Length: 167
Image (cartoon, rainbow, N blue to C red; front, side, top):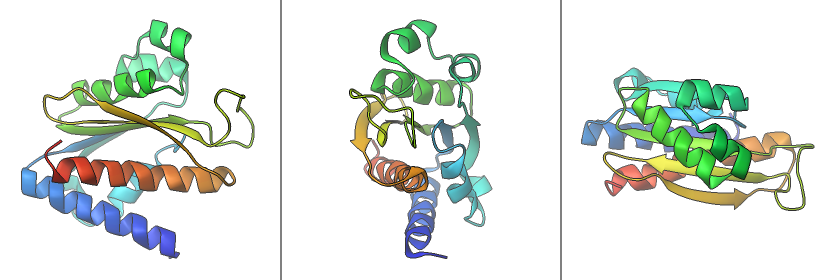
């Protein structure tokens, strides 16, 4: 296991401990990571006590059908937008038994980027009990795999931070 994988596994373990301490369950809504965050979470033995489910919604149709993302949001802002991931996180909570959720959508590359949204652009949303999702856009460098790995790590870091402080 590489140093980065160890770090991700440690983040997932610490997230699980924080969720268990608070008695909360987690749901994930992933696009550009294709289930990579869920894979990191389920590396942890006993994660079924705090991980409810994950949604891999790569297409816009999947985002609409599985998570209830508005077609108007997708048309106006695009799949890679804070507006879309906010709706993805809220949808993951509505469609699960979780109190906590994270959502990601981005452009991992090697193509698909634009001047406005270059390759490496990733939008994140984190939602907790009773709260409006918090969103953020980050920009990662490197190849497709590097962008995806950085996205998994940042999503887990954001979740751990918010769960630890109670959102």
